[in-house]
Image 1 (tube, rainbow, N blue to C red):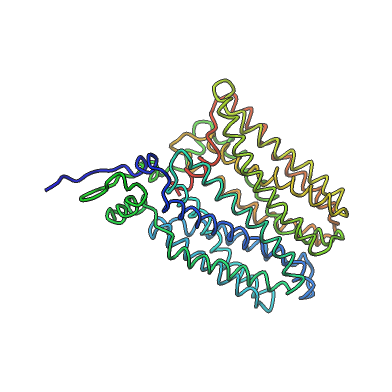
Image 2: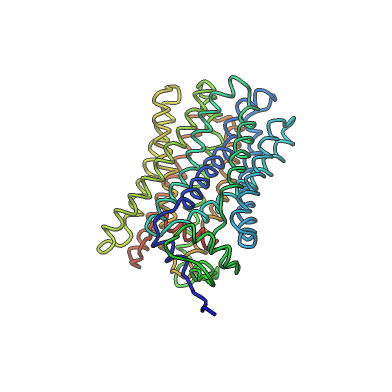
Length: 468
């Protein structure tokens, strides 16, 4: 009887050329990420038309936006453990169908109460899809290109918001607000059908669950030259299964660092989700046509996509050049510059609300700085914690930060209800952004004193997703 052969999955994937199966898996993850990003922002595009159609004030939609964001947090927390039990593929398909069906049903909502329930249910699905798309992409990517593939999939969510805005600007004036929910429901169902037929399960997940025959089938397609036949068992990275205790986030003098980091993440989500939810309404209030208002919000997403790709790349490249002599300066310098750029151009947006051309240009730059810096703060989070606590540190920072995704839409509703005009509200958004810059400055001082090193932003996201 031939002895059992042991194969390291990571080494096999890293050594092999990127196969057709891997390209198909990553392409489907990207397509689903684009639709996830589009559906997450549809309600913001629809609010001006819904407000007029239902005779409700725009401020009355604040609860809807806050609960939708909260539902995404629940979905992320709920479906992470479920995916570890059921597998990435099943959860991705389930959550995609979940958000697609309830987005489609939103087109027929007769009242605010019904719409709130439907958007909560859709939000749970949206929140469950995101981390599993990142995890599956990471697990199918070789180390040499993992950061690139993960960053592209993450940026796909911003691309979805951009494309959704372009579609909304055309569909709503012609067919009403219901049309974008129909499109947002039908398209994911079509892609889900392709994913059901063509999206493979993670080979690492199958091996970890003891399904070595299933893993062998996938690994044979990835690396046919490896000759995986007969009796084979697979080993999986130990770091994937490692669980870091929460107490490590506050040990070793890291308590203040952790709190400061959480402040930055909360502000990041607060400002971004405030803009996601209220930009079209505020631009309409300032005199922009409904189509221009939605187009401007869409360009914020385009800037965010460009910023995520650029800031992650700059952080990785400059960080490599600086690493020996200047520690982790690169990530702090790049992210602080990004937030400062965002804050300055939020002020410019406030000054040019009535000028369509300048508004479209400046809001794109705001997206580049604000939304694009999200990749950089993940890199900073990774630098604060040792390897044993890194996944927990990143995961908790993002989870606590989601409080801002609820607070941002709620704050926007309160400011609109208080009768503030669009210019004043945008100017007020400079304040939390400036606080984020100052908080990062305090973290930077502590970082220099301790001499930590920042790992790549996309690599950090991949580590967090795999550990999740």
